[in-house]
Amino acid sequence: MTFNDNASVGGSTARRRGGGAAIAGGGIAGVGAIAVLLFQLFTGQDISGLVGGGGAVGGGEETRIEQCQSGADANERDDCRLAAGQLVLDQFWEGQVQGYTPPQLFVVDGSTSTQCGTASNQTGPFYCPPEQAVYVDPTFFGLLRQQFDATAGPLAQLYVLAHEYGHHVQNIAGIMEAHPNKGTGPDSNGVRLELQADCFAGAWVGDMTEQVDENGVPFLEAPTQQQIADAINAAQTVGDDHIQQESGGVVNPETWTHGSSEQRQRWFETGYRNGVGACETFGIPGGSL
Image (cartoon, rainbow, N blue to C red):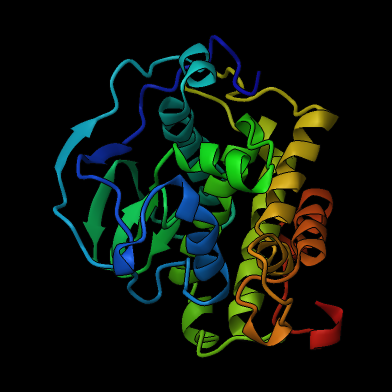
């Protein structure tokens, strides 16, 4: 398990939104097209939501995530796990960033329109800076398992959420503004932003047992080595080189937007071992990324 069963997680402000059929730009849809869509997502488009992607559909009804009160609930359901993860991540970043303001978390049901394009399981989790909002469709994790042989277990899912929270921190701290994402390549600002978000996620995982609920009960159990390996596996799976290989393409670093599998694993581990202060990806040469 990841959450302590008796931890109180009922204070999340996460909302469920959607209800439309999942679609993708150009009419590509269905499980058979996921490899192509993820290839486009991770190597050609901006997953952090800095630009739009795909045609928008109706936003859908917005509702609370019901019956998500305890750590046991979070261990049983992906949507509740994400909502509970919001509480833990906000508490962590409140202690790291002065004047921290939390993002809004939307758990997507089917698809929904955003200011950054359509959110669905085929566009993957992303952060939308204009809204200061994170969008995640939990069924995305199943697609990672099917198409890219990722384990995508509970801690890996929280790693993905923590990565998107890393983009929020970059936004409110002025990092995105100082280092605008204007191109691709192994030394690009886009790759540096993504690797830093991986490092931020690792820093949170390294500190995750320090956050407690209103009764002083730790939200999360200490992660096992297998759970850490699962999170690292998720980081490796979404490396640009791995996505290109699995999609049947040629590995071309000049098109990279997120970094290689080795880089994503290494920066996650850097944050996990050394904390937020070690996550400086902009002050180093490209060869050291």
